[in-house]
Image (cartoon, rainbow, N blue to C red; front, top):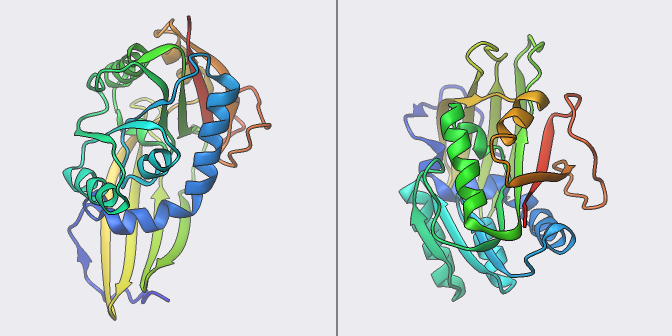
Length: 267
């Protein structure tokens, strides 16, 4: 169990610069996410290929998984540390993928791709309408006709007045990581919500604590549909949630917290 002693100093270290700890925290969902992506491509994809794009690929969990399953994978991330970590994992596994340090708001590497995915709310780092639109249009342009984009993010309740905390504890090979992600009520006018990640890591008997603060852009259902309408070549074919059940398809609504939208490029 990690030492939660509040006297342990907080390091000035962005959690995206510690890819191994980030990977440990999110790894438990990897198998479910991979299964969902393959099922979604089979059920909703019309291009019938195996070329995959992952914007904001992070520590490479899904890059590695899709490459193991025989897909031709391209991944991008703004963090050089994340891309270096992913490259090392691919080398160790004797697998190949195309990787690039890049901003999500920029045009992705040249396709065409049959599947694109961004599963864990990273889309909300794009804090302006212009950046979000550029991202969606760029992914759409990079898809083959009939290709799909699986986009996961949290909807915002603008009536919320209390802070919220998500808590994880995971361990791997003697490294124990506790992660708390705290969000505060959103600013509805600016469409921003404050977010803080706290990691407590115990490794080789030493405990470290890090704290990362940022803002997410907020969306309710109407705001997302308004943005999506500006990319007319995309159609929303189904909405799922972070249970990753391919048979649980529903209409996006403001009663949901997490949504996994399947967007398809029109032929």
